[in-house]
Length: 196
Length: 177
Image 1 (cartoon, rainbow over the protein chains, first blue to last red):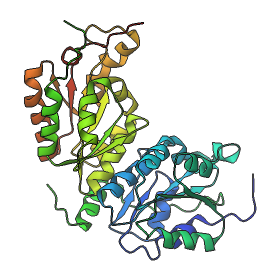
Image 2: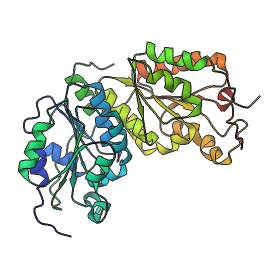
Image 3: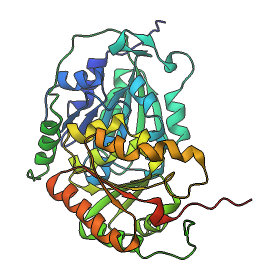
Image 4: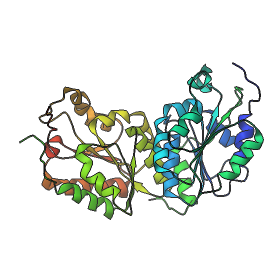
């Protein structure tokens, strides 16, 4: 199913992280982790290569631990659907510094492009809103992405949720580190924690 | 005596003190009657954040984020929830998390509900297959010692640990019409 005005995923993520300042970026299993890597490696990038459905909850744990720093979860529609209940958990906790954006290509791109629920019936923005994330919207232009990117720096007005419909292009993978201990300890080091 | 007592036990308070002493900050949980006293204490504590979950695996991921952000946590759940966590337990090994969980057991001591038995029987094995050490407390007077040892090895040695609070300790849920 092809639709007009679809965004380019790499352009969206590059825009979100262009002026990130101290923000943490959590990428869901799959292409969104490659998109974050493509935007440039950073010691506050939390790359996921597994744990499907866990991206939003990892973002919530980080956001509660570091309430003065922005946390942005960038994930895909399949990963979000698997952890759909976590939107209800975020809605209950109301972390002011947490932003979530779903790069929605309506398909499981890593496994052959099988269509996901968002292609036909599931409305993630509606779900997020109904879970108590009042600031939830669909973004369909780069101007709206830019506005979302600057809003995520405001750690007093979250949580916020956005869904960006992106084109289905399967881009070249940009591989981040997949050593979890290194990834986590590097994030911890960036906020002044030394190894045990 | 296998039925649950009506009076408040002392051991949940002992667990709460241990969690305070180890500077636990995030306490994700799926409600369970056996944890209700502890959950109440956590929700009333200024230094801890109780986080109600829709499913237990959310708690594993939350604790990974908490650790990356410099905070310790503990996951409170009952034995049936352990099965919900299996794939997310990958994070415990991959991130070498100081993972600590307190599990109230069902299906092993005077159980009324047969649906609790399959997962209750597999809880310990699931943890061990997932690389998580298992300790168990069956009597009120050993809870403090066991939970303290579990917290110490989890937080000080990054050795993922589950403490099973046995159904013998908690008492079986009484079903009345």
